Length: 214
Ligand SMILES: [Zn+2]
Image 1 (spheres, rainbow, N blue to C red):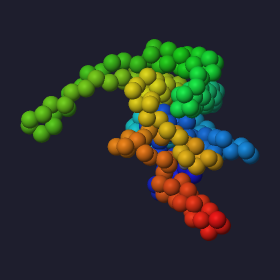
Image 2 (tube, rainbow, N blue to C red):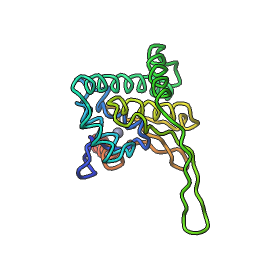
Image 3 (cartoon, rainbow, N blue to C red):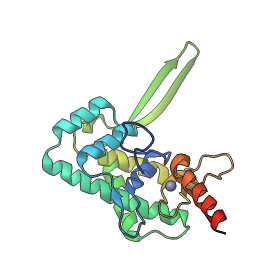
């Protein structure tokens, strides 16, 4: 159901965190007759990072120009590998079972590679005359034109969520053909659907149907 509600965007970012939206980019993951791949090429990977605000337009243009066929293909494969390992671990965590050791190893490798290319940046931004907002973030200036940059940024994003307290807020959509991941930030932790407009309505329609038949 990607891109159904937001005009020109390709990705439905209902997950509330780029790491979960990445996992959801393999749509209908558990469907019997197979999933839908949304990350079909390197261009879609760049578009995902753009729509998720992990890269700006200038950076995307730079990477789009610099990516040779082989490097871009390799990065696409690695991003999908990262995504599938992340999916394995997020679904396992939600179901409170141990993830596959191979998935943990893949993530370890991705996080390590990301760690070799990131730099800590300190920034302050004056807000009005009174407050100065300061923060420290990972940045990737030296790797800006490297075709693998999307892989490292997404690895960092998966690492951020997986190793944070928010991991306990990761839920799956109640619709059994969907099961998209999302971060439940609702006050009472009662959110049940990836997207109220799509899956929420689907569940309401199904209950209505059941009442009529029952
Ligand atoms: Zn859903």
